[in-house]
Amino acid sequence: MKIIHTIAEMQAASDVFRIEGKRIAFVPTMGFLHQGHLSLMEKGREKADILIASIFVNPAQFGPNEDLDTYPRAMESDLEKCKEVGVDIVFTPTNDQIYPQGYETYVELEKLPHHLCGLSRPVFFKGITTVVTKLFHIVKPHIAIFGEKDFQQLAIIKRMVRDLNMEVEVLGGALVREEDGLAMSSRNAYLTDDQRKEGLRLFQSLCKAKEMVQAGESNPKAICDMAKIHISKAHEAQIDYISICDPDTLNEVDAITGPTLMALAVMMGKTRLIDNMVLIP
Ligand code: PAF
Image 1 (cartoon, rainbow, N blue to C red):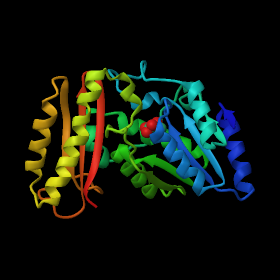
Image 2 (cartoon, rainbow, N blue to C red):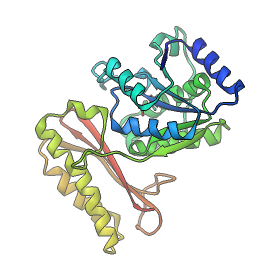
Image 3 (cartoon, rainbow, N blue to C red):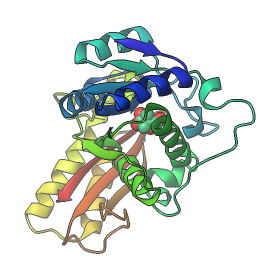
Image 4 (tube, helix red, strand yellow):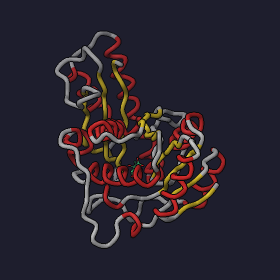
């Protein structure tokens, strides 16, 4: 496994793979890898000749009061994990490589970011679409894989790729849960034992919501109320949003009839947890 730190070297390596007719799969990450990331890499391994992962904690997607400085980092063990899963190249640029002095170009969508996480994290998706665009130009993948846990991110990247005619096939990878159902996330490392236990209320609410829909409930308010009550029982929980929405537009639905997604974000103490489930595919 090769580790590349510079944009020029990464672009040159990808050019060679492309000239040789090899297909490149790419999994961008911010590191502190868990099974959720590794499952995306396994998917990439199956789908292409060359698997490239990036590890870069992207400052542009953190707001001024967010956890950029404390975001968990574990480069050594991340590299071990990448090697085990069969990554060919890990691209780990510095901030200065990605955002050199004088940097001023951003990529922004008009609608999809103004829902769910984008409402309380105004710079988040602009930072993501910008860095992903840059990474696509640097890594030059044929396929890129993003986790369905970050459902809104995946929807936004797919929209951006369509809108800007980027020649990258974007695939989703299934959300991976701990044995008890907590959605895997690098930020779970911040949770105390109590918060970790209370964090299960998100998954429990989603499961209950699905049961309600399967039993014939079509009123989103009834389901949101159930989730609100269940999650609020955790004394450190502050609900950011509970949304029952159209999975394509992310607009909230008035009735659960067609394809429907339920998405949640909750601050558990200082840690932001998100989760989602498709209620009707
Ligand atoms: O999902 C993530 O880890 C990040 O948002 C991404 C896609 C690597 C961009 O920084």
